[in-house]
Length: 267
Image (cartoon, rainbow, N blue to C red; front, side):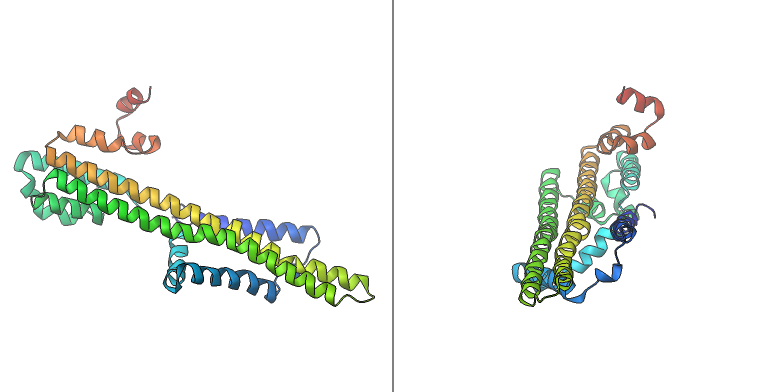
């Protein structure tokens, strides 16, 4: 649970750090929450997304934000254990014997590959189909990530635009009171603050988080493919497990391999 909400906790920490430091320096939070600069920065950023990527991608953006802060949890260990168990049964009874057990697999991509293998798809065709889907998923994910990367560029620009507009208004209404002019100039820079804040604490971190989610899903897909291909080739269960475990991080390998085998591998 902690891992799932860590990104959201990071956002909260960033908000408290930035605005808390401002308050500690004697500033007033109310002075930062002015409606016009916020409308210029966020409204302008959203408008740029709609113009550049279309309304459908703009609406989908909010689903992606939820996915970034509350990502899907992948469990490669469970998939590995399932495939290793299947390898024991396949060596004894053949691939067709796995037909009734496929639905026990939680991960959809692995389940689909197993179904194709049991139905008689040859290894080369299965690999081509799987790699085609992995490539398609990667292109879709990167196009979504690109939206947030662009938003990280739009937001500061909109902030500068809002600041310029504020300075124009401040100078055009400059009177004999220098204090009023100074206050208006200070207010004008709030738009720049919101632009830089949203870019570096919201949009760009979401892009980075989505990249990480993509890498985790891609690892699961590649792991599933290698496992099913190993099943089709009739590899011994120990070799199947070693092959799949080698695709995990060192920490994950340590939890799955016997201590002696782990020390031997990383000595």
